[in-house]
Length: 150
Image (cartoon, rainbow, N blue to C red; front, side, top):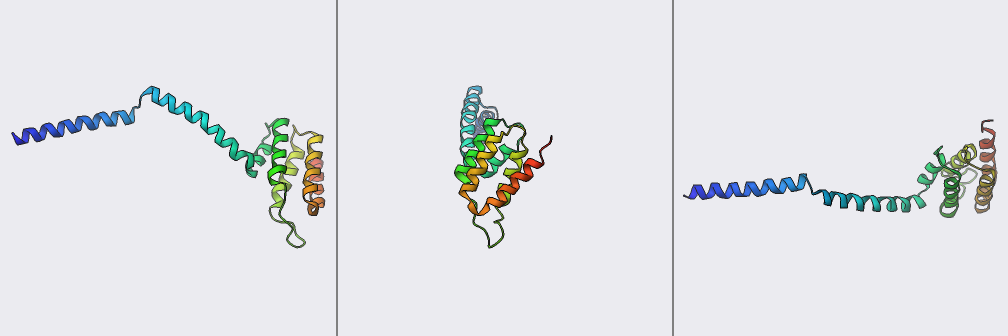
């Protein structure tokens, strides 16, 4: 009699365990749709907030050949707004972070959707914020414009 009760208890626990595993592995379709809908709504908001301030993501927008003029202009404005001040010179040499800005200048000059107004505006604003780097900024823009295909 005791073994029969023990066997029944184990079988009951096993059935409960199987039901719980089934619920975990195969969730309800409504729950799945709700979760995916909430995730799809929340994820882009988080990405855009981090992209607004991240220099590397702004640089990726500029390097993307499919970026349109509006996206390029917004990225350049955000770079000026949040990353416009370049670190001071290290004696005679430029700060190593200036290479990132040179890359942006060179890339924007070569981008097919960049307009001359956009390039000139970015040049003036960056030079105004960083008077120590005016020569280097002008050199980077000149090299970028000279390397443009005809």
